[in-house]
Image 1: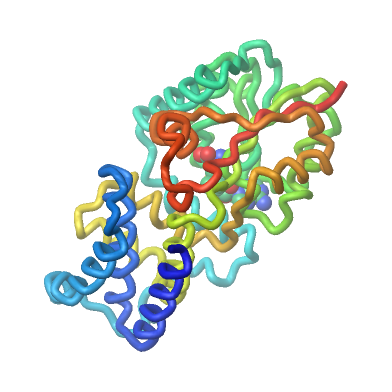
Image 2: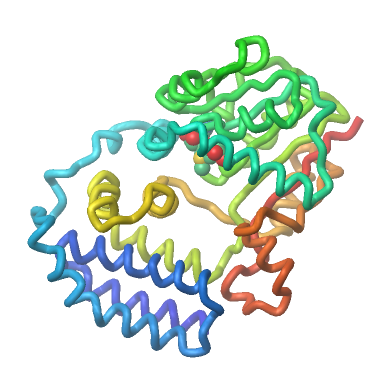
Length: 343
Ligand SMILES: C[S@@+](CC[C@H](N)C(=O)[O-])C[C@H]1O[C@@H](n2cnc3c(N)ncnc32)[C@H](O)[C@@H]1O
């Protein structure tokens, strides 16, 4: 089945080589609509036919909005400035362009609920920790949620100076309880054993050297310290095949163009964030559980364990509730690990 899908993408991609930016944009949007539909309904037996029909309908769909949103064929008017930056800063800029739309307190409240659901279902408790590091904190939503969950002092670092300023503005705690700094997770500006808890959520798979990131987390963690690691899993699944296809056809379609187009089309901010994230972040690795296990052992996290539960919409929780689901949909699930550094 998987080969059939890949062949289909391959043939579609070649016919898009000379197509206009708008058609590429709509193809990506439409494929993600298809994925969303699969999540909301049960997975249909004839999904391949559905996808083909969706793609065939693109011509009509495209003509509907073409006159509302015209663009030069090559996207040159929309060049995003970040293209000139080194890769880690470019990653930071891609995310800041997304975070800056999420400055409402309610969004931070939702993050706290997600975190608590994941902790409760996996029987985890962070209340005893004195000093936590959120490595790759973005807008600081988890840094603040971890503080509210009971960690005495939290430090958040991110490669993007804009994200750090944004997170600092969203922080209502005094600086000796929550602080944000600009730094790379590959070169943390902290002494060995500075923290008793480290947290890195969805960051290291976007860096140039995941093992270096894990070594740094291990170095700044005290012996006996614990932590949380989230990496992309679900390797070789329908979702990632579609993501890779979209990344290929969107390689000359600017991020700002896609964000504006989806806004005009009425997509809510959360969905625009989610899609632009997968389409535009420069480095986007994903892992099998055995690969993560190996890396954790090699970098000193000898007693870590994979978490099997998640919040309601996490892949792990969906697999947990439907163990017989087609493995091509969610594969092994996401990769959330509870880290432990030996004493
Ligand atoms: C998917 S976001 C996750 C943010 C946050 N952990 C969360 O879950 O809301 C990835 C974040 O990692 C940051 N990042 C990427 N590479 C980094 C690096 N080398 N050092 C520090 N931060 C980095 C990005 O700027 C971005 O804010």
